[in-house]
Length: 311
Ligand code: ATP
Image (cartoon, rainbow, N blue to C red; front, top):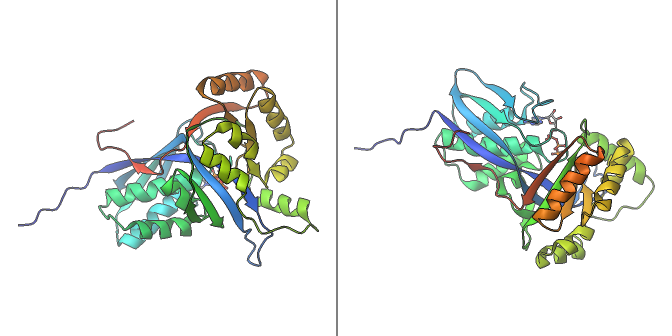
């Protein structure tokens, strides 16, 4: 006699945010996409996504960063659940509750993170146990940052960011994130980048030896000056206050600072836990930023939490 393992009524997955330690952007291709060479780094700033069997598909959002998250079919988590149902031949609906601590439209890939968490949570809820290659394929169809949020750690990304390759990275890094009021639209930032670089010859993006060496060394003093983002000038051009935030963080002792992805979150690297605390306090007191978060990296990718865990 065979027995079928009971599946749980709901599953929660936790997923980190990302920061791009290096983001090199090539000239736009004929299909409009920009070829990238990037180093993704997952940090311990998390969203939690709970999927629950339901009569109808739906999504709700709570948490410190819930403002501005769409609750309709454009929500990336909902799209991820529907895609996985299709792949697994599942006809049941789920309700998705997102507890959001990753800034929205902040350049930390919060939407992609929720999609990655939803993929692993629904896979567990429906007992699919899909092969990793199939989850990765679904992830890259949902968005170019989603495969990295499944993987976590520190990785190189090429193509549109969805082609991942391992990178030798040592150490734990202490980050302080300066959040700004309002988000920046990723397409707007790329368009501004193209405008600022018009007429210039743009080299094909390739990883810099400085970044690779810094990551191998595990030394934050080497990583600080190596942080690079080709979108930074465009983000500052659209939101000039970001220049002041960068100056303030460096003045307060950060080893390096960089706009995260398409911004407007600014990531500062600190020497250690104590320095990160000091930096966070100084940035908060300066009034130059809307909010401050501290997190270490690297972090694991999207992971299902233990069945007994409810909060
Ligand atoms: P990236 O760095 O990947 O370009 P981002 O961090 O700047 O993205 P996100 O927080 O991923 O920005 O959100 C970008 C847009 O995606 C939001 O403005 C929102 O309209 C939409 N979106 C869809 N689903 C989600 C979600 N689950 N969480 C947040 N935003 C979402």
